[in-house]
Image (tube, rainbow, N blue to C red; front, top):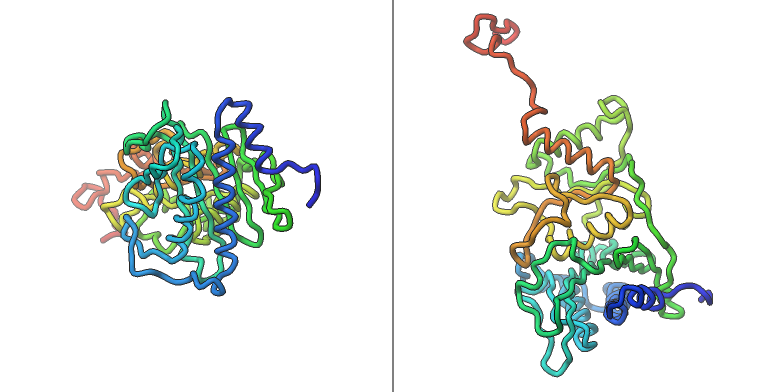
Length: 357
């Protein structure tokens, strides 16, 4: 360990002191849960925790063993400290009530315990995403307390379990990265003041769903794939890891745009990613780093949640590319991007185009 470097504990306590709140102790509990999860993930097959269970979560997705174990790790690390009024998890149908034997605080912790868990069996980076809100007073949280727009988040972050374990965090004053020093057991500030470049030539999307996308997204991706020979005049690279934490981490470090847009594959779902557990915290982190986060038609942090497990489209990353894609959605919605067809050359017109005869 290099002495004199800023630890996560020192950082969050100082930030909480400046903001006159008790977030520091809660974030230290979250960091302790992350260390436990990091050890679970690192054991891989040796820990006997890989594979799926016979159960499904509230979204109807088959749960991995690690989904359940990591969920329990966060609950048990954070329930007893006295800062929380309640917790909500992507893996649980209803909010988690703090056990009667523990004191209540005024904070709400919402989280995805293991984002990208489908990758755990193949040893690809996975992560934990979390977000913190506050009630006006301490006490047991009601279900409606969780339905707050992302702009009311007090803190947000994620942990990524890769070649090294990192926590990336914002308390509303920039986005900062901490790397786990396994020798000392401390998270050390290694990436202060992360900034997302405003321009990029890298995009991330699952192109197997291209036929289901809306025209604005099809237009954007086709322009990127056309490269120098197309209207953009620039070659783009495409990435897709199928782990939101890994995608967002790459964008924070070197720029890019991540898209999980609205599609027609399942018309009953307005999007794929969860507003409370994934979109809101990642949007706060990206915006605090100078990027942008949108549904394509609305800033994500302005979306008013209507239900605990609400889904929506997500487009985030380098500001200029996100704004371009928002413009494409506006053009599509008002009809200005659709080709003009003259009635003079319609099928029954006086001047029918002979090339179609």
